[in-house]
Image (tube, rainbow, N blue to C red; front, side, top):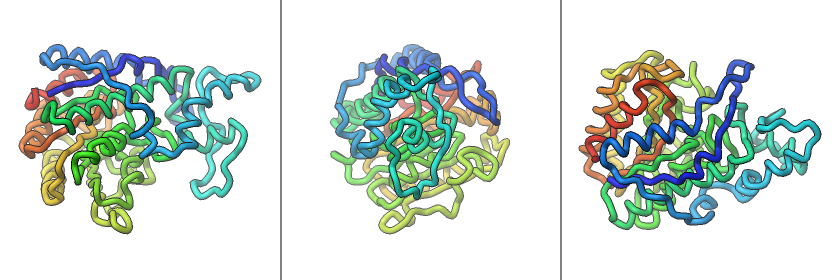
Amino acid sequence: MKAFYHQDQSQHDPKFYMKNGKPIPARETPERGDIFRQVLTDLNISINPAKDFGLSYISEVHSPDYVDFLRSVYAKWKQLPDASEEIIPKSNPGRYAATYPKDVIGQVGWHLMDTSCPLGEGTWKGVYASAQTAISAADALANKECTSAYAVCRPPGHHAFSDGGAGFCFLNNSAIAAQRLLKDFNRVAILDVDLHHGNGTQAIFWRRKDVMTLSIHADPAYCYPHYWGYAHEKGEGEGFGYNVNLPISEGTGDAEFLETLDIALEQLDAYAPDAVIIALGLDASEQDPFAVLSLTTEGFGEIGKRVKALNKPTLFVQEGGYISPILGSNLAAVLTPFS
């Protein structure tokens, strides 16, 4: 296994996010990256510096107005009177609004789809570096430098839509990595095992069949992202049947999760992808601060073993998983079969 990281990810250092109407300390912090890299050192997996591939693969996933917004909005925001240090939206339009706003406040509401992704001075550098990390890992896999790779990505990406950020996510790293893999592989599958549904990833590939998306996640009837992730959502047009959602109940532990994983892997195998991306959320842990699901470290180890048994070129892209005493142990358990 080869691993990749870019030090500029730490430039994104949010201080808070809104939960139940109150600002609380940020959970998606640079310390997560430190923990993940220490695990790689302990497993004797070399960490390679991410290369800079520019905007090419990013722009295949994200709209030009959104990319321009991310890289320029902070300077515009700071020109406002009494501007806050971190940007959160004042309002959000319906996604079918007809007119793109000219003013920065309106653009913030257009592109930042909820209040859980505050944007700070270093956010663009951080999210750009995170995306380059995912591309670099995908590039190594595609060039047959390795049969498995791990992208140490933070901030995460699976809630990011083509034109907007949400849920700690700004650029969709897994989707961007898939675009790189498609240059060398005809069919790619993305299996998302994060606590939360990968709604941005689903939306990006909703009408496509060259990338199959599968997600195991807490039932959105009671958990973020609330509006997406239900079992009946299967894609549209050419993409119908290539999106699979497997919501699970609050409190689910190892046994039920792994039974659901086997269902997902059977469908993934039937798709016969040339390469597999695992959108690796670790927030289903029994000790994660979100405290919704109850996977043990042993359960995460089984995820790694069962994915390994696919015998496919495999790319792990880090998604969620927040600070707890066993965060590092859970990552180590998943990666050990590949190390």
